[in-house]
Length: 379
Ligand SMILES: Cc1ncc(COP(=O)(O)O)c(C=O)c1O
Image (spheres, rainbow, N blue to C red):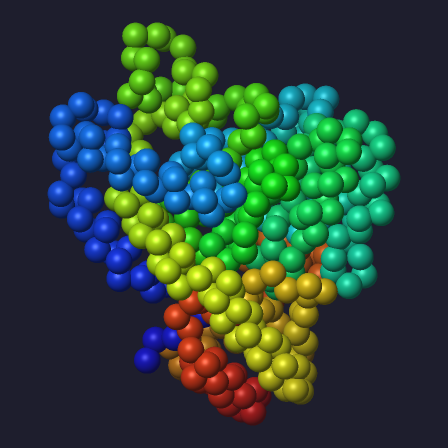
């Protein structure tokens, strides 16, 4: 039977209500939000508003109008980096950032932005004293991943936000791995911007991402175009979210995402987190017992994602055998985060990554461990 252990990439399966909501939106709504004052237009607008309000709740934002729909976390991260940083600006980022931060930064560096990496501790955490020193010089932005997509390590978001707040530097939080699993508390922590996926822990369909921008931060949009508002003016509206949402949005995605969040609230975010993390802790302890297996145990665990290597075996080969012989889907290699693997000492081969989801059972984890033991015994 197919065993999916790659929820850090995208969550699967989706709760049945998500699939039903997408179907209902495709079948029953003959309009896009903000485009049409007829009944279907109003219904579409209500679906979008409901989804926005639920996202605001999850992100800890009191004004849902500050929540922007994007197509994924990557778009939100690009929007902020390219809309906020200018040539000559200095930006600090951690050694755990995903390529969705590293690559736009690389482009910006070629245009005169100065990007500096915050050192890590030997245990794979963030070196806060080093950050404090780096903040002594002016900086325009600090980019922080909330939890690593490689080994689930939790980053000290409250401490970073506090340090940056003292220097007046906004923090861009990449919550791709944590939204839906951990409270984000954007306003309480005074975060500048938060970008996340809608299709991972929030259990929505693919093609959904979210961005929060604090009202005092004048971030330029990535795109201009039709917003369904102020059509008589040639300039892009200044108001959020229209400023950042040009073109027909993903209404079926919004309908599904609202249901995904509804499911999380029904089950309890903490209960889902505890379930996934308890599976991860079990995995960590069983894997650590296997000869030749090295588990990348984080200093503090933020999600249920577990990474490991096997002596003398390429992660890609192991992933291939698990897929071909056992119908088990894990992710192998660098997980679009080569920087994190450099920080953790697993570059360039990477690791085998196992990421359980809300519906993964203990029995499924046992099946995975049994499959792995049998592969390792035959080496
Ligand atoms: C930490 C992190 N940031 C950003 C992304 C990009 O997310 P998306 O695929 O929604 O663009 C991912 C996806 O795996 C991620 O794990």
